[in-house]
Amino acid sequence: MSSADSYDVAIVGGGHNGLVCACYLAKAGLRVVVLERRHIVGGAVCTEDDLIPGYKIDVGSSAHIMIHLTPVVR
Image (tube, rainbow, N blue to C red; front, side, top):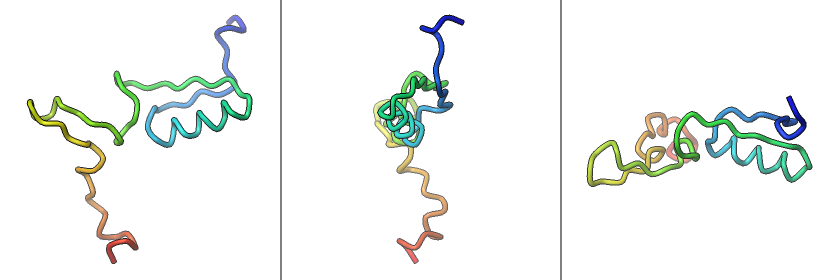
């Protein structure tokens, strides 16, 4: 592996937390790569239009199955 192909850290998952972590590590001077299986990053914080044709859905905001357990709703 050449030095151009090496990284200090590999982040698996390009969701919100993975991207924030990658930014902080890069800001600290580390060489970071983010690996994401999908064609877009953002994880649950993304808008999809392939679930229901003609409609855009914010994926993360449509799945609050445990929100009733949080202090915000109690």
